[in-house]
Amino acid sequence: MKKKICIGAGIILIILIVAGIITNYADSGRVTTGHEPKYCIKIVSNDGSKITYWGLGYKVIRYVGVSPNEPYESNIGVKMGSWFMKYDLPNEKSITIEYDGKTVEINNYDDINKIYNILVNSKYNSEICDGINTHKITIDNEVYYLKESCQEIQKGNKQSKISKEDLDTILKIIDSKQ
Image 1 (cartoon, rainbow, N blue to C red):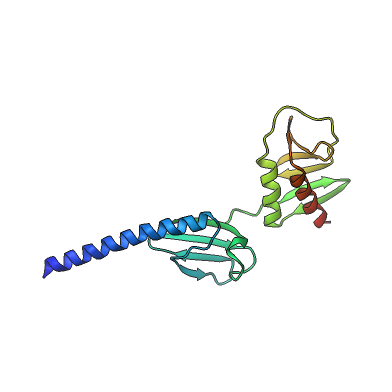
Image 2 (cartoon, rainbow, N blue to C red; image 1 turned 120 degrees about the vertical axis):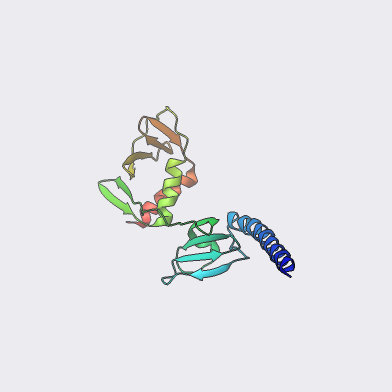
């Protein structure tokens, strides 16, 4: 009798482990492609800004931009890991932009991410164009200069070419804050 109970418990444990591996694999694929996890229990925080999905041996934490009823794609932070993982959004950054004697402070998380990704992920080389610095952008005590005429960004003594779309994105964000 005792042997049957041990064998039964072992079989159930093996089934749970295999099911956890399969559901973890399926949900990690969904999360990395920007979809909501499927094989989890969904728990929404009291203020609705954080959703935790609990799976078999893993969890997904998602911070929502507007409300938990928004589509999964409108999240502002997603992290997947073990049940013991802790995840909080990084401290709010702000970007200061100076141009034409005006100063604009950007505090919107999405706008900060767009500008930050354009500036930080650009490939800087040592060639500097003769254009005029039109905007001074300060992020985390790092100063960047935007040169509209050359479609370039200057960081220190290095410069990077940016696309017309990236330049337009930055200018639209600045115009919306006026």
